[in-house]
Amino acid sequence: MSRRIALVTGAASGIGEAVVRRLAADGVLVLAFDRDAAALARLRDAMPLVGDVTRQADVDAAMAAAAG
Image (cartoon, rainbow, N blue to C red):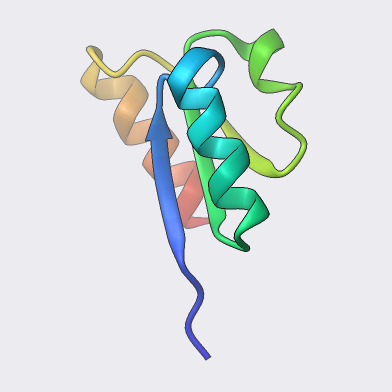
């Protein structure tokens, strides 16, 4: 059985947060990527990945964490 997975950037607020909440409600495993760790902590139905998408090292670290 396959599982749907989504990576949402800008996930801690606004449209990004709304997308995270909707996808999670639909049963998608959501990887929530944002610079704001405190705001990501509010997203209980997503895997928080803290980082800045403009920094390659942050993106690489987040992807490594997501891969397990």
